[in-house]
Image (cartoon, rainbow, N blue to C red; front, side, top):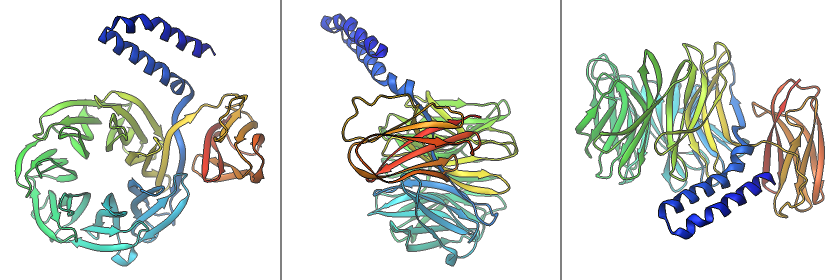
Length: 486
């Protein structure tokens, strides 16, 4: 009530400014109102883990490199599966449940999916590598292969990024050492069937690798990467160099922004240590804006994507690293690269945890993937977003068409009271999960009448840490975070 009274006072006090017709005053009042409206979510919500899934079998090194939201439901990941030594595609629901998984050992050993992109009509295109050559794989929405291409230029090649072109073909960025002892940036243009139309390489003495590519409005391309040759290269429609820039940085991801501008993410050295480097340029690679972000150790960005409202960017990478020690790192930026929030996970002693791809989802949260290291690498799939800080709620004015879920006390020692509201008689499940997404207990599974309900979770047999309570009913779900302290 105190906050509501305060909001009303702001509105009343601002009324004379509006009546004067002062445009600047109107803008100030509007800004104040927006802040007030957003204030409850700032006070009562944190960015935190909604769920995580760890995939690691047979003690091998598993990694998830890229993720995309499916148009029907859930998320599709690609990476490397150690059990079959091959590329995997794995689809999870929006709640992290496995819907299906495909591996492709029939293509040969040591294949890996590095980047996934929509190919239209519910299909997907994946680029990666197989036995030292570039792999292009097209699949349908169930992961069934629609075609495979392998590109061998006589050396060791890696595929890093693929984009669909306006003629329904594909442009592939990567590297090859076929034309010398060192790697060169490689660009491959194919038709819709994956047949090569042209290729170009770019490099000087030293290692040069391309990690990303984007299309320009005039039919050309911008290639990003790093090495002795360039960190960004502006190309025409057949791959001829128009201009380039090399400011000592490595860029691992590029996205197109409004007005034919481009935003890139990666790292550069600052006082001898790598830091996250975000830069915006026009289509001639003239810098418009940039920002660096450092931590107590090494830090770098591996992925950048626009937010769904196009009012900012979401960045994924690592932080607090030093040799073989790092944390997963995700941060949200506005359009001028101010940090709105950041989030980190992992980073135990002598472990190297990384986020390779992150995107905002249609529900306003964020889906990410990477790997975490224990005795070996495990593929990590995770969703982060706003987690409501639970407060005691009398539920006297609950909308009749919504589920609600709270717990009190939180944090708690040994037991906590979980309250939930059902708008109708329905079948429900009330489950407890640990931080790795493993179900540790089911509190209720069955039919319950409409109204308020209470469940007691006795966690005396569990270790301290973060847990999640998930209420599922009628295809809808609510999740809250709970902290057990002993």
